[in-house]
Image 1: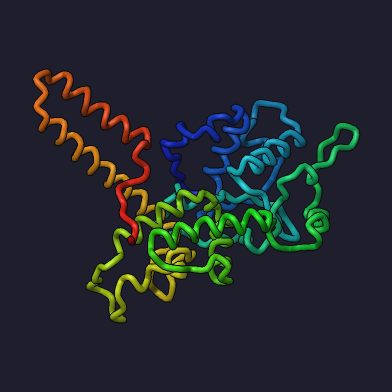
Image 2 (image 1 turned 30 degrees about the horizontal axis):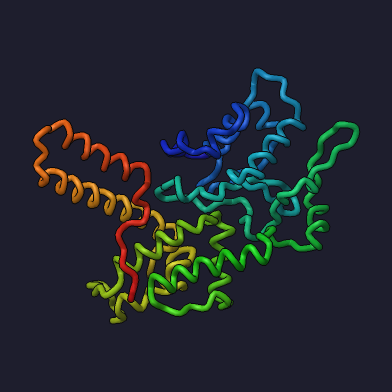
Length: 308
C-alpha cells in the first residue's frame, strides 16, 4: 500500500492541472496517492472505476479514455511489459521527498514500451473504444521494444540548446554530438526533465557555487572545477560515490534562485529607504512593487556574469 504522499501547493497554480475536468483531476490525485515510492502503479481499470467513482456508473471504456488523456497531457505516462500495463509519474521525484524509500517491484519504464502519443493507439469498432495491445503497438513502432522517443530532430535540438547554454555559462567547449552527452540528456528527458529552463537554471547554479571553490572533504585532491562537467551534473544519481544527480541539483538550484531573489528584494528595498521619501506610504508602495515584481518571476534570470 502506498504511503502518505505530498500535494505541492503550486498544483493550484498549474494551468496544466487546473484545466483538467473534475473527473480527470480526481483520477490524477488518486494516482498520486496510490503510486509506489518510485511513482509507478499497475493499471486496473475495474479497480480504478470502483475506487474513484464508487457512486457513478462509469463505463470501462470511459476510464480508459480518461487515463489516456492524462497520458497525452503528460501528467502520467502509460507503459507496458509483456504481461501488464502500468503508469508512472514523469515528475515524481520533483515533488515527492520520501525517506527510506522502497525499491519498486514494478518494471522500470525505461525497460518497457511507452504508449504512443498519437491516436493510432486507439481503435473504435461500432462505437466501442478499446486500448490496442502493446504487442500491436510494438509493430506500429517498427518492432522496437524501447520507449518511444522524441523525434530525432527535436531531440537533437533539445540537446544542442542545452549544451550551447552549458558552454556559454562555463566557458567550456562541450560537443552536443558526444555519445556520452546524448546518452545522459536522453535519459534525463525520459525521466521527465523536458523543460530546457530547468537545465539553464542548474548550469547557473553549479557554475556560480562551484567555480573556483575549494572543497574541504575533497579526498582525491581534484579542484571543484573538475566536476563542472556533464558526466557529473546530468547523471541520474551519485557517480562513483560523488555528486547528487540532476534531480537533486535542480532542487538545490531552485533554492539558490529563491535566495538570490530575496537578496535582490532586500537590496532594492534598501535603495528605496535611502532615497528618504517624505511620504512613508509612497516608500511602502515602492517596496511592495519590488516584491511583486520578484514574485511574478520578472527576475527569473538572477544576476550572473558568464566567463568573458
